[in-house]
Image 1 (cartoon, one colour):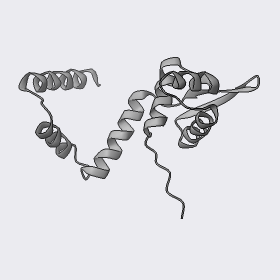
Image 2 (cartoon, rainbow, N blue to C red; image 1 turned 30 degrees about the vertical axis):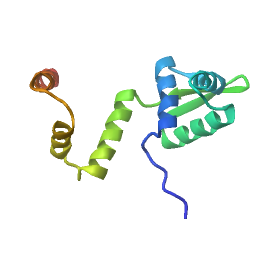
Image 3 (cartoon, one colour; image 1 turned 90 degrees about the horizontal axis):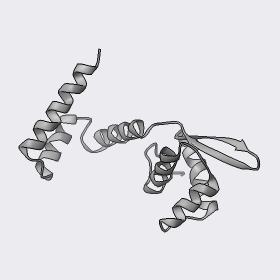
Image 4 (cartoon, rainbow, N blue to C red; image 1 turned 45 degrees about the vertical axis):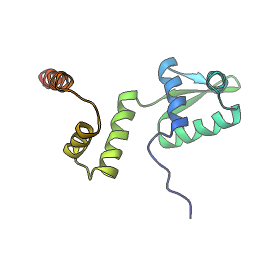
Amino acid sequence: MARKRSQVLTDGERRIMDILWRRGEAPIRAVADELAGAGGAANATVNTMLKILETKGFVERRKEGRAFVYAPTVTRAQARSSALGNMLAQFFDGSPEALAQHLLKDTDLDLDKLEAIERSLDDSQEDTP
């Protein structure tokens, strides 16, 4: 039986998305060249991964000459929210409180950082109508 396709970015897909978010759009060759500089991937691998990203709805493509140019269809913030929602559902029974408790217990957040987060949250709530 085929494995269900994940709607969360894998590490390799996220590296490609980082390039597309930074550049706005890019042909396969440019993405492969940039990945090659970081220990990279072959054109065929990048092509396959971009097709998967297109199937998942993270990118769209258009033909330019003989090449396909890919552009993100979601922002980094949208991908982050989707991944966080998936993680909440999968590991914390959908409870943001459980995630917050986990972060407080397992990280070195001090009182100053917590107060800064609270101020940031207060500011963002004031900005929403």
